[in-house]
Every structure is written in C-alpha cells, then in structure tokens.
Image 1: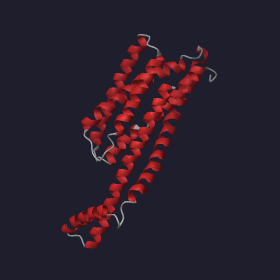
Image 2: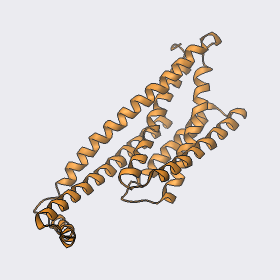
Image 3: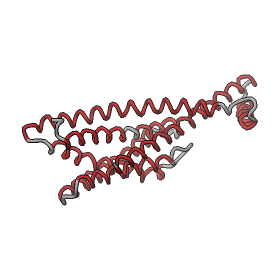
Image 4: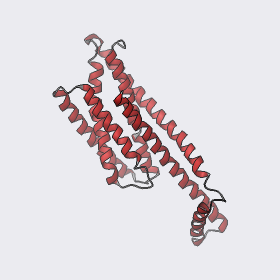
Length: 239
C-alpha cells in the first residue's frame, strides 16, 4: 500500500500530528510541578481541551460535507496547533491563572479535532477498496509510532534542555554573586526565625535556591521546545 502517494503523505502527517500533540504533556507537567495545581483543577483544564476537540470534530464534519479541500483543513488545523505552541511559549512563567490558558487550550483542541477525521479519511480513501484494511493498519501504525516516538522525543528534549539551562543558571549561584548571596541570606534568616540552627538554615536556603533554579530551567526548556515545535509546524504548513 505504500506505493500510493496519498497514503505515504497521510502516514507522515499522522506521525507529525502526534509528535506535536505530545507537547501537551509538558503543560500538564508544569501545572503539577511548577504551578502546584491540584489534580481536580488539572482535570478541569483537560475538559476544556476536550471541548475544543468536540468543536474541531464538528467543524471538520461541516467542512467535509461542504467539500472543502482537505489540504485547507490540514492547513487550518496545523495553523491552530502552531498558534497554540507560540501562545503557550509566553505562559511558561512562575505562575499563571486558569483564565490565561483557556484560549490556547481550546485552540489546541480545535486543531486536533479538525485534523483527526480528515487525516483518517485522507489516508484510507487513497487506496483501492481491496487494500482498505492495509491502509487502516498503516494509519494505526502512524498513530502508534507517532505517539510513542513523539513522547520519547519530547521527554528527551526536556531532559537535554533542562540540564543545559540548569547548568547556565546555577553558574550565577556563587559566593561572588552578591544578588544570589543576598537572596539566600534572606531565606536563611527566615529559617533561623523559625528556630533552625544557622547551619541547617543555610543548608535549607541553598536547597531552596537550587529548587527554584531547577524550576526555572524546566520553564526555559519548555519555552524552547514549544518555540521549536511552533516553527516546525509553520515550516510544515508552508512546504
């Protein structure tokens, strides 16, 4: 079945589609580890994204019934995914409100809903009827490997960029840096006022400082990954 160009293109788009979806996990991770949201709040955000999926599926159905060219649907879907990535790049800060992420989360859901059904139809309808099962298997394979490899790529990117940014930021936590020393002295003083010994207070202040550095490194790595993914989607749309 791979001799049919549409199926190969559909397979590749499925693959790229699921890689771009894998970045959503970074948002959920930031909610837990950086913004300290409780699980019920994160679940509510996922419902918001699900609402976007429903809207996207309805729009995809309307476009298909009105014979809108599939390429235009693909472009619109990937444009929304690119917009989501660029928008969320500016939301990876120390704290955000739920209102800040509603629109990009809905846009991501709409983009996913717009692309899913047209991608399936584009992939399966490009081959003769007697090869329909094989084309379906190819589509499922694209979905599986896209999800699996996408997750691996994103997680490895997080580890790589987090280490890079942590190393760069930790270089400023030195005895020669007056700003970092003043900040650590204030933290240590707060621990001393709570009854800790000076030695323990300094140790806790150092630990808290590097915890903050680690969180900043994660936020910077997320920003970098989302920026790269956004530009990759723009390149896909253009070419």
